[in-house]
Amino acid sequence: MTNITPFRPVPLPFARPIRLGILISGGGSTLLNFLEKIDSGELSAEVPLVIASRPGCGGVSRARSAGLVCDVVERKSFPGTAEFSQAIFSKCRSARVELVVLAGFLNLIEVPDDFRYRVMNIHPALIPSFCGRGFYGFKVHEAVLARGAKVSGCTVHFADNQYDHGPILLQSCVAVADDDTAQTLAARVFAAECQAYPEAIRLYAAGRLEIAGQRVRVLEARQTAAAGKEGQKADEKG
Ligand code: GRF
Image: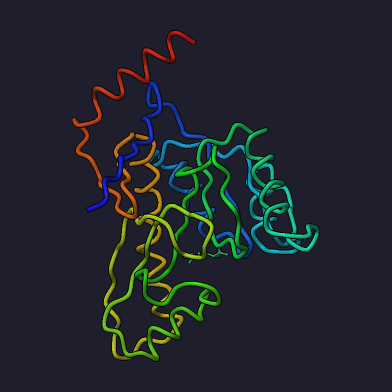
């Protein structure tokens, strides 16, 4: 058996809001859900930066209407994935982003070492089914229905350098109904996403995740109390 040293992201000191960098390519519905959850007090976060990979996508105007900084970084402006990713993460560093959240972001990125386990993605199916290159939007739900699956759902995972890969943090299941269309199934899955993604961010910010290889353990709140005190001490020292 291989021995894997588990990694625990540290909790935020003083339970202050986590600084999110949100990456979008489409309508920004996941972004809007975060903003609603922040407004209602269910998610302690701020959004110093949104990056869109498509200049005309609906999410750009939605983000800017909400008063957020939204930069456009197009894949075609760069020779390769490495350069494209460097441009994105350089902006994230400048904005002091703590967690990068992919929210309907359709391009592959390479996660640099300093952002390892600091990039999350949500996929609208139960990984490892119906995921990977080409599985996005309604295509995912169409494939679920075509295969006759009885359950679907959503998966929040840490992003690595492959599509819909990386350690799984949370999954939430929904039933597939006999009369479902891709649209009705997508709506049910999205309702599950709206709970699961903020929950994953809350667990991360609270230091309640332990990653070992592809497995992520969700820790009880009390298991992180000591780690929280350490973080606080470090912060007081400046
Ligand atoms: C969500 O369903 C999410 O699962 C997927 O993209 C969808 C959000 O797209 N990754 P958008 O924000 O409306 O573009």
